[in-house]
Length: 211
Image 1 (spheres, helix red, strand yellow):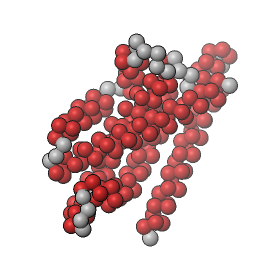
Image 2: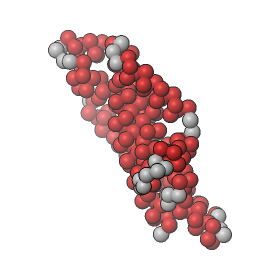
Image 3: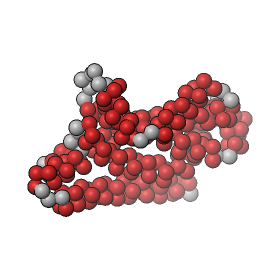
Image 4: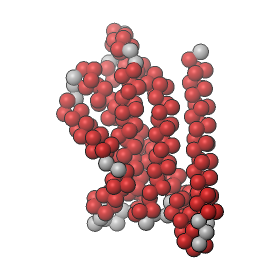
């Protein structure tokens, strides 16, 4: 029961954190790539640079602890919400750089061709650039979500019953470390294998759609 409860919490945090990371990452990537290509959004680009520097320059565990013990210390916000906010904000920084690299890898002629056909900058990005960029960065995005899934194992530091914490509780009560921790490792391995398989299927569909 500890493992099942912990698994549910881990999957819930990972899912919501991934959604936050994708939305935040794509917005930041668009702002930064727009600045790189047109010089516009200078102020927003500066804010994004500060965000990326701080998030990527500090450990995820420290960010989680600051979020729980400092930012939301005086509130009664659910620990699960605090966790997926912390992990989502952290993931957003890495997703942003992954997506931006994908956008910048698309030949500038694609953007110019879209504009010459009468598309606005936003429409060109949405209909022409972003689909190609998404296909290029899909493996890197999948790797980021795998890392995110495994990073949730530190949720126990704020008292959350995640998968790793569940295994640790079993270890402390049975005085047997091998079986519960091995079970936790196997569950994480199975989850990663399932996620990797889904990504491979998506990649095959994208390749088939090109043909």
